[in-house]
Image (cartoon, rainbow, N blue to C red; front, side):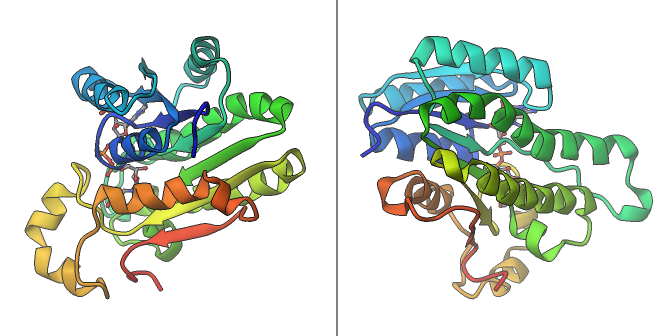
Length: 246
Ligand code: NAP
């Protein structure tokens, strides 16, 4: 279904990003996997994509670095010939109560989660606008919809991603570029491992569907939003949270 398309997936080495790489590769997309530092995990994911019959390469790049992202997008364009799909998934947490939150922790989370998505959109959209085709999906969070105590930095970054998504959707619609957000709830990855282990019962009780999500649950929603089945959807925020934030 996505044959001959190239997808950039940031944070593709592990967790949700890895599942997105594998799902899009299973649909036939070539994968440009962006990661921060975990080369072994990135290469393993790329190898698993190639086993599905597509081209896949890894690019180490800090999404928070505007110029590094520019250079990486240029390399990806040269390597793959074009970019039809962008999934802004790279993200970090630095949780803490507001009254004691360090400026550096606020800045890091905004720089990575919100500005990182802007950097990739900024450098990829000229390619998509020229081609008059593009599918962008930004990974937000239910924390950006509801707010979450102990996550002022993260909630602000993920609410910002929703605003960025809607503005991008409005600006680029005339060029046949759609932009949507996916807002996961609790998904079992390295990011949530400790929290889920410590508060398993309370977390499960807060989720109407009664279970923590799997990375594949999020990947399926992303796959739908970049597929030919969703051509009339833009500026949407799709929760994948077992009903948690309704
Ligand atoms: P994860 O397992 O911690 O993986 C994070 C990924 O982001 C890794 O691939 C990491 O690369 C990459 N990354 C981090 N900082 C980066 C940077 N500065 N530049 C480039 N890549 C960077 O996280 P996850 O749980 O899969 O989360 C994926 C996304 O979903 C995030 O945006 C997160 O906020 C969002 N989300 C997660 C949940 C959840 O419950 N897990 C819920 C809502 C939203 P390395 O492997 O190289 O370190």
